[in-house]
Image 1: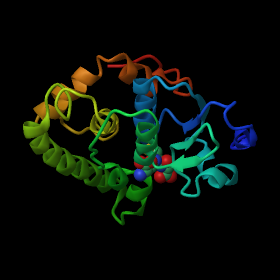
Image 2 (image 1 turned 120 degrees about the vertical axis):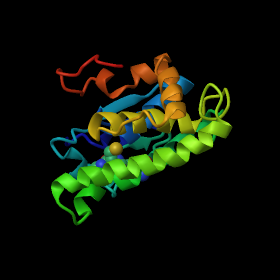
Image 3 (image 1 turned 90 degrees about the vertical axis):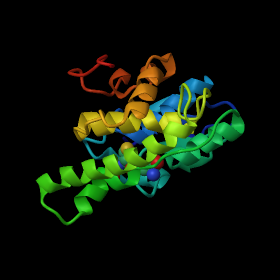
Image 4 (image 1 turned 180 degrees about the vertical axis):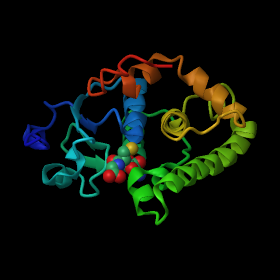
Length: 214
Ligand SMILES: N[C@@H](CCC(=O)N[C@@H](CS)C(=O)NCC(=O)O)C(=O)O
């Protein structure tokens, strides 16, 4: 943990970009997909969220919001916010568009702040997902093709897959009312970039789920 951020001091151009990531972070998965999709070589530093490493002083020096992901470009620039990182990647290595962001409202930190009993927080999180998915489903009816925006992969696809994972695995959201989202998600999950970057394919994920990618 004391090594967090130390590689910023390496000489620019000789270093690979670095992604601070956790298997447990859906927003990190967005960035892993983008990196895989664009074939960008990078290093990963695994932050153990269960051990609250993201709340450490060392990590806060990189990302004062104490959230994942964080990305250090090969020139040593620190970027936080998954969509900003993806936009940066897009500007450096072009080809994308649109995004849906249900994420901030269902984040654990936000759920803890919501002044309701623990069991009702789950219902609240589900409701946030369902509201977001309802809006997205309607957009996809007219906008989608093979993927969210026609037949070309976009940022929306990078966000969609981790969002459906969080909704179903962590919050038990029923996806039956969302056939467009489900179809596109299933199609995306056949692609190697979405599979290799899956949380359960990450070295820092628990052995109990390792390799279980559906
Ligand atoms: N808008 C931010 C959200 C980042 C975020 O909420 N990350 C979560 C993991 S998916 C996190 O680090 N949570 C830690 C916490 O809330 O304490 C982004 O897209 O990067």
